[in-house]
Length: 467
Image (tube, rainbow, N blue to C red; front, side, top):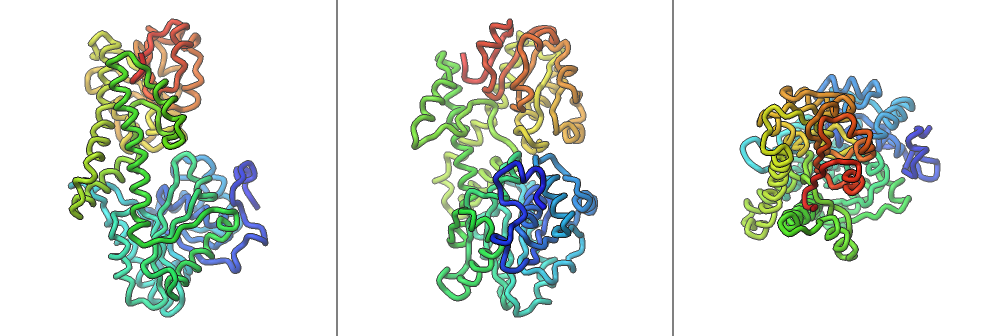
């Protein structure tokens, strides 16, 4: 039965007889982090029997009891739906994968500690655990599907490791989940990309495509477009998309820097250029820049791989994109110092937001958290609040004072910084908020406040790129 969340959204929910797979497939998802947990739950909603595998026993226990190990709207509902129908289970035992028809590799590929490239160790370890189970299905058609974001060339390396296993096909199927909207994106993706190692018209190519079509049948019947291409093309789709989006963000932030020097308003500039259908308005809001577990990592990994392949000169723009993004965090700290008349030490500062974006508790490479830590390092007395990310803040930045109640975080503050655009912060009443603080001064780090309204309520307002 579909969950309340699914009933409220026009998504691919628990399938009807018309959309159910010809037979339920046994699907495994190896790696139950952010990507894997969401994908496993979505595959159960699509009508498959799904086994999630991870070496993290506490996380597996959480998922098995229906508790989402991170904040993602709708995830708890689809977990409960799959578990209640016995369509979804979680384990730490690789032997449970022996009868799988399809195995998704959903491992993290973080930035390496010794450079900008991607760390593929988790992916290779997963394949080490899977191969003995694949040998037990010798000769039966089995699909191994890569979901992880990897450097171009990785899929062929992994395919070589599977070459002596008859009936096993590797397909690269990049994910396009957006944190905060991941469940909706998994149930109704805006496109499906299949990267295959053979000619798609060859018997082996057709078999691989047909096998993955069977997995995604409800999505395909709902009209989701599908593209079949080479391994290399599929690997480049995700990192290219993220690098392009990062470029767009850094471009408007570069324009914002020019606006600050000329008195122009970057919000007006962005609005006007976004009306050009060749450009569009998305990702043109100036502020403290991008963060999270994807855009920064993928941009650096693409640049690193291009340099390894001798094409680094063609991607010099990405170095500037990364540098501009880092500069926005510095600029926010400078604005705070200016607002406090050059004196950060001892100043009472309220920071609204710690996650890198709203509707997530993810603080990986979060501009908000880094700015808060820099202010504290300069001597400011920082109180930081966030609806979801405070446990992560306490773990990663114990020097910061966390405050679950934003009203308490704001009390007696000499400066307020809005650094994550949670709806509750965007909806703050400036007159009521002014009564909480010691001095009504705010820096809008995300370009989301109605500045004339706040100024009319007596606030001194600053925003990057705005007069």
